[in-house]
Image 1 (cartoon, rainbow, N blue to C red):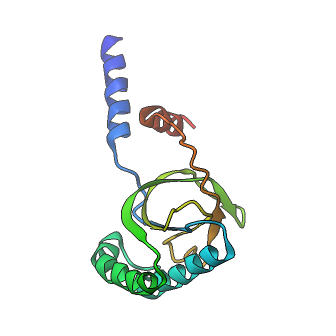
Image 2: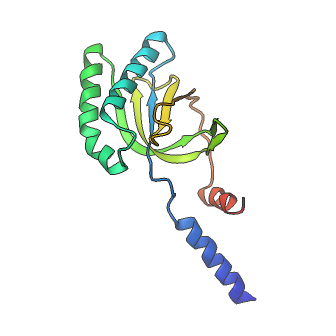
Image 3: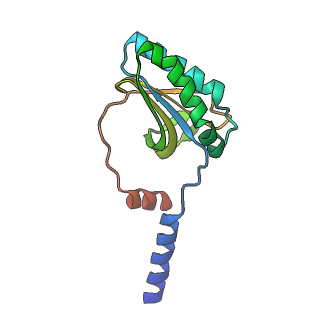
Length: 159
């Protein structure tokens, strides 16, 4: 019986350390505020992103294009006196449904572009070709959601 329990524990541990299956990147552009001006600037930055990044680009291609994208955004924002921060990092995304298909919530690797104060509504999309031209708006609340990684992985295993 002890061997059986050890085998189960080892299997659970292996499942927990397997990396996420999703290989695609998400893209998030966060406006400085919710003013009409800042929201318009956000959408102009989104258009710059869409001109540089294609929905078929892999994470590696996007990482190669990062300096080009950063330079184009800087050239657009600098004359307007707007600062920005751009990085690829794990970000929390809420659950969404689209045409009966559920886009799971969770932490995903994302290209995050934060404009100015970064306190406005944010635009985001998935880099999958079927979703690339579909965007979502979420309010950046500033609240922190605490989750335990292993507990979340266990819940997914036993669903």
